[in-house]
Length: 227
Image 1: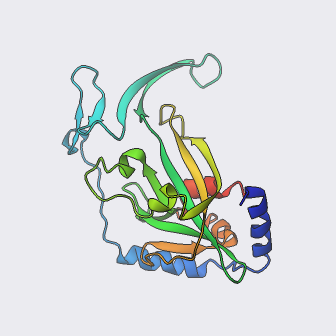
Image 2: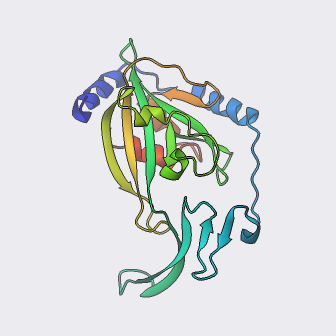
């Protein structure tokens, strides 16, 4: 289905779909209460698996994957607040996938699957994020752990239909020339997902949730923006 056709489906859905965000807020509150997760800042020298390369001074992972922290020197002339500056910057050799799954119910309502995801820097620990948010290093299990959940829905074309896919540049003040594939995919058949970590929302509910403080990942906003 082309995105132009899907927009028409979404517009019809908006005439009948739920707008009330209170069920999603209750789900998020219950998920946060049931989630055991703790993060604290520690000295960079104490971070396991990461070290400083003696030759370059860059910070890197023992696997050689994920990202490095390097230095960048910029000259901007009169374009910025200062004409020249140095700073640390993340350099990642590959991007990743930021993806949301959607379905069109028998009632004609379009719903989008979001992940209640924990990240070290999240306010409130659990934040509403894309169904899949993974770098290629994560997908290739460079960390030695499990493969990201739902990865197959974005790697196996038999399971989903691509509504749109576009490369989006990461925030250039922190990442060196990195882009991610932003994807919206339509499930080819109805599926159920772990209710503790995933929640279905309508576009109207998603927009309402975006007006709340510190609930919705910026990636959700960029993926849904073309609709």
